[in-house]
Image (cartoon, rainbow, N blue to C red; front, side):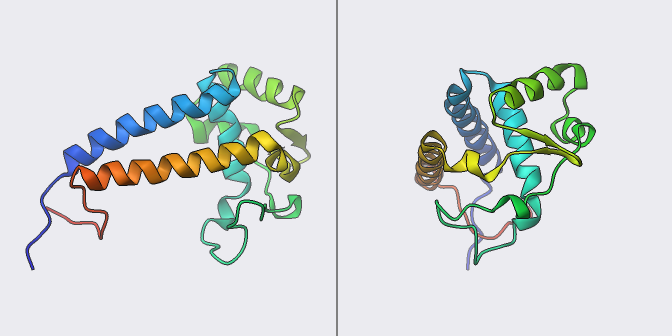
Length: 152
């Protein structure tokens, strides 16, 4: 069976373009503020990182991990995770707390599950899913193999 073509540079270029386009689109939900999106996403992904391998629960649109399943992230850990200096990140954290998107708890920052039940968040999840399907279709159309990783 012949090896798939080496299209790593094409894949990298397409993924970079699509990532910037997707981030731009998603940031519009935060008044066009990419850093606010990054901070918010950094918190909720850290809160639920331990659930990444879960494939039998918390997978459907309305199957949202409850607060009891969310693990807080310390501000310092978030700044390190996002590669953001605290003097840049902290005002965004404060603003997201002020609008109820993030809560500060004893062990750190948490995006409460109720945030994900909001109509705009559910619409955003649908939109992001649809855009991912489009990205995968464009990659396939460009000849990018989505199979096992190859070493050249």
